[in-house]
Length: 541
Image (cartoon, rainbow, N blue to C red; front, side, top):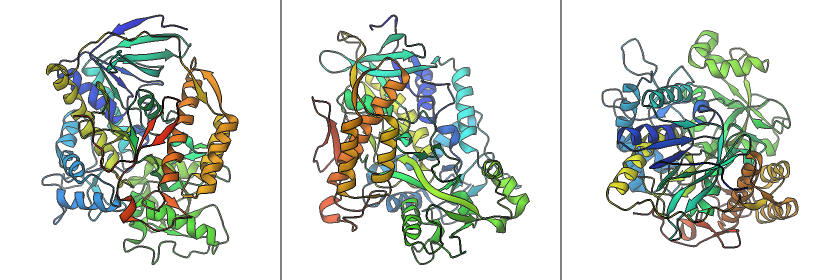
């Protein structure tokens, strides 16, 4: 089916979360013609589910002894040797201005009686530097403020349209985007610049903190457009997602790390501490450490329960828990758990993609006219494991920088409206059975991996994959999940070590001599994602 309609702009932003809306409003302010495309409603992405806050060191608001340099150091430590130090420095340093701009635009953060912003501490942080809103509803407030700013700035948003493929000129530069509405009607958006801000890939797994829209669409779009991805083997599992019963599927309620920041501890069914002696920071260790420790503890079986542990926050009391964590409280009460009286049943679940489309700190990819920001991008900030509450920070900072990069590239003549390659019918690509994919990815490509299990994932994908016409949102998502799953297992198979979120049970040690580098993955002409060995990764300049 060929496109039935077309329109043109300077910049198409795919995604309406923190990175996408920040980029769109900034681009509009810079005078660009911009259009936001989102496959669901404008506020249906990952951003509104973020609980903890924004990690940032604000002038006059930070703890004595805290600094941007300390935040950088904590980020590098959490990233387990794979962060780009220059990128970390630039993006963390951009945090104060980004948060100030967000507040100026109407976002309201929690504050104390002295008028200073309230701050909490989360895993891997050496200080109380995470600012929050609504107790534990920071993402919802950030999204509310950004949606309002976009509407006030008259940024057009095309809801209910899924991105099918990035369109390119015969020379390979970006020329626009092929989209499909909820009724299966295709259209073309011509533009010299496309910014991917599609979020994560949590739906690769049976249980995740991510909403149903997190199907790795942006990674698939980038790979098919010729851009590399990197660090995709590093999928972060949040240690404390509310356990709702054996076999839970889809989005599971998050129990923010800030609960542990306020003194809660992980225990097993006998009351024994899970993190005792595991790490100097104990329950506030980085997420990869805590999730792996929970997994090992459950496998050893000392508590008699093999699929969840408990987060004991009863010391906070009913009033304080209700004031500080209203979102978590509502989720717990819905499952019959009163956190003021009962330890909260929790288990690790897929949470965040630490890798993504290779970009520089301004969102540029090696494909002319293609940009990426937020969780879908690999800027070098996260390395092998993301530091808690650095995600909203990255979306705010890189979203704005990417908009400025597009404006500069357009103004400097580096981007121009080129001749659009012939837009053929909607593509036909491989897509696996989603249920089978999620089951084998959860079983063999989760927290613990080994060569035999990764090979099983590939075999199951082979058996359950067929070529499908991308004429529905479900088909687009299934195809994206299939391509991204293959990229993840390809990268995981070649990294023969354990580091950060990537745990190989057959290679349990970290290998700094052989693996202190990222491995990019590209798609071959036959459509298979394959690792490309390289010692350095940079975005297009």
